[in-house]
Amino acid sequence: MNKLKNCPECGKLYLEVGQKMCPACYDIELEQEQIVHTYVRDHDKCSITQIVEDTGVKEKVVLRMLKNGRFINSGGAVITYPCEKCGAEIYTGRFCEKCSQDLLDQAAKLEAKKSAAAAQRIDRSHTMYNAGKDFRS
Image (cartoon, rainbow, N blue to C red):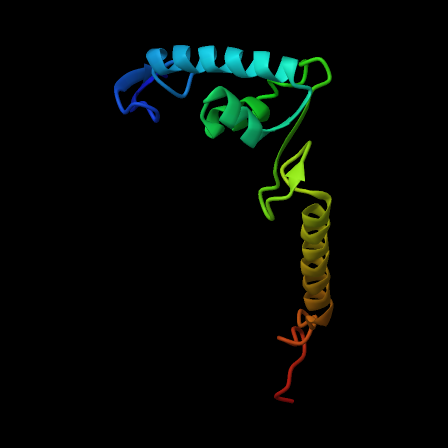
């Protein structure tokens, strides 16, 4: 169902039909994407900061393009962007190798703690009640 929302770019009310912004801002973003796509095609190896500085397009537009996979078919262009955790320049994914490994190590530690806690639990299902025994006699 369509919802009435405020555009995150300009603040105007619009009826959301799929895009996350009003039609006017969506058209502007498509034009900006074309500018960025042309720039990336002409400059094989570039970073997001270079794209933003040279084209004047907002960084969030370029990041949105990356997340939506708009640069996959750009003729072998290599675009770097910052790791979400440490800020190191990366080519794919959300995290660099070091941060990815740190996250995996943390997950393994949590899993080990969880399994150690489960192993320490005492099975008390048989000690709570002594069904069938009469202690009065």
